[in-house]
Length: 145
View 1 (cartoon, rainbow, N blue to C red):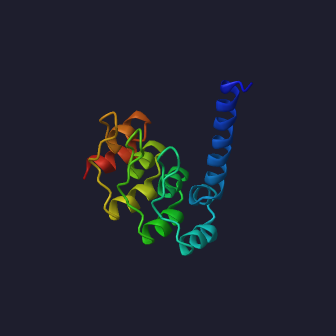
View 2 (cartoon, rainbow, N blue to C red):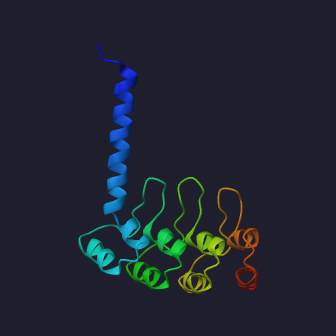
């Protein structure tokens, strides 16, 4: 007799493993690892530049988080959406950059059309996130817009 709870657990574990494999092979890990040649190869093979991982993050979100201006330029040149939001938190790349204090990335995102007034799921703007994380220079830049 099959214990259905064991079957469900096994299926969940297999799905989690497949999701992890997908992430590791995807554009997101290449962006995190600063692997521009791999990102270019994936894009050349037809990977969507705005593909989302299970949490709703795009490669641009990951490049921004790392403060990787060069990767951000590559992704934006490939057509990445500058105002794309995560699934649950509705965070834009600008929100992430402001939380991390990456001034060069913030400047690039703004020049690329990022909306400084976009609000996340908590109703917070990028300036609010900069303030929350004590990034005064970022806060001043965003308030000056």
